[in-house]
Length: 225
Length: 162
Image 1 (spheres, rainbow over the protein chains, first blue to last red):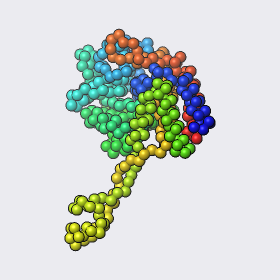
Image 2: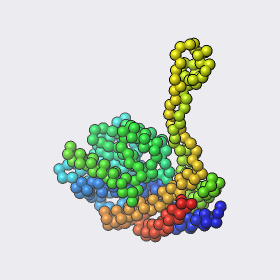
Image 3: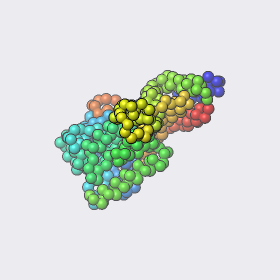
Image 4: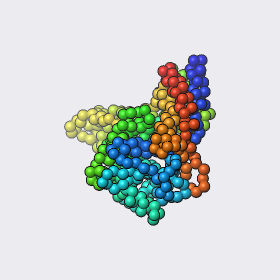
């Protein structure tokens, strides 16, 4: 290897040493962060459309910090003091935004949902009775994928299964990823699914497009609720 | 960059990732490289009647003297191997996505948390009682690394221009 290239590789190695924090750059940590990032985009979009935003723990208290799940759990789980957001729009039923909860689909099978917008009344009912939310009360579902390379097509196929078992009028299921793939995008577009790829801080077009999609849904929710 | 240089650099980058405890990024790179680049290919279709390529002169002798059919070609989806240079680009892109991007996201989340609940600390924990948080993100962890990541991005950029 020529000296200058070797030198550049060495520079990358040195820089990597100062950047890598195992707690942030493991595969699972990166996925957890990405889900929370999508949660923050949902909150921002709702606020732009006039939502009053509050936060609550699973025990109904006001959180002193954000606590999110690293793996999907139940909306009623009190093992940890998980945080969710409450969205209030004037004259409409309140909504909650959750990270990593399970809900039951049309088939009554339980699905894992990275980020979800749920009727607050349903969420409270579920917490009291220790049952998962029903798909008819889950308005938005976000399947979040963090990858370092092109997305495998299999992710699109499994997303289709989730979407089919969830979709109904006025409800939306989104595939959101930080990278992209021509095959996967073609597959999802061909089957008329909702997707946004290349979502990361600083990629204004992709982030804004996702935010606008959510805003548009909020506009319709306010109109029909 | 010659093909040999590309192969050498690709291998060096994967080794580097594994040495830094980032084997999962190396695995995703290898997965993508093994699948290849999606492409299209024009192919002669096999005649469904005789199971031979259309246009073969002996066809009439086999199926009788009816109308000669035109040779039919169709476009099929296919894949081609990535070149060594393309592999290097995939590796560099993945290295950035797996190291710099999580930090940028963490930075955005720390700011979000500070704004929303007045505490820049975020905790990620499994839904089990008594387990320790797997990920704790706060300004102290993120800020110095975000600064360092700019240097890493610059180094990756230089390497990509070789």
